[in-house]
Image (cartoon, rainbow, N blue to C red; front, side, top):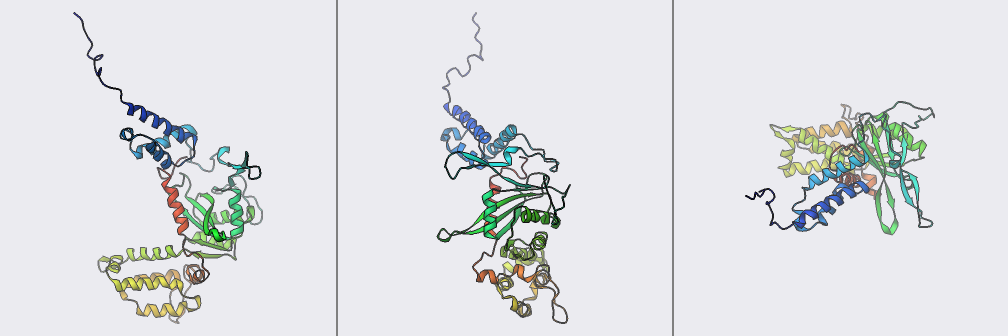
Length: 376
């Protein structure tokens, strides 16, 4: 009797599925681009799906899975950085430099410094005394970026947290405003900084490095209302004019409305449902556009007309921005000086009133990463 194995006879008449080969090729290309290029994760995934046939795309893993694959491939190839102790972290040489094309001959590349400053290597105070053992700060940027900061003197600064590697507290960026005449005015990201904490003393150390090591002396700086950074700017550069971002000013007031209640209802909801209250809130925002010499009189007149439901808002504005009124009619010092949040002169001079260009840069950067607080 002839015995035929049922397993050997399985799928004997099936036609080969070419889409499986396409999927394998797409995954191979995905891995190569992840390891051999510095393209954004989202770009690599989009390219893999775009260059795969419609039939094969249906068999590819989901986009989230592909993004995680890219991260795993890069970790396997480059090694996962152990950022538990950033003080002892060794940065490979290939991440300290970049290749710049020879602009004279148009041929060949020269190696340029990208890690501009590492407090572990050399750090000094204002008196030139060597410092040791302080929380680490890394400053990255090109030589052209430093030159742009020297020439512009009009800075925009802000921090973000989602893309901050484990072990660091903040990813802080410094941008400058460039006027190219007929080509327009635009904001250029220049320095990319990893900070261990957000204390005033740490900002002071950072700015001392920029002042004495790189010779940077900004005249104007726009930032959010982070007191530590503002105090550090004024300490290192006493003549600098620091402005708070108008968007953050209004955002802080909206947060105060959301935190306050009117009866048992959020004051923010009450304002949203009441056009008259909305108009009065905007009047408070408009204080930023009143000339400094008129601020006190205009604010006193405005407070006298505001609806009492908005008392939490104007008490907050009194404390943080105007200074609390005394019985004698004077004001105490506010948390933020009038010149920081007032936009009258910037509006008159045609200067930006917000840090929105920096916020947009950070938002774009965050979309390039598949995870928060990456390891590598």
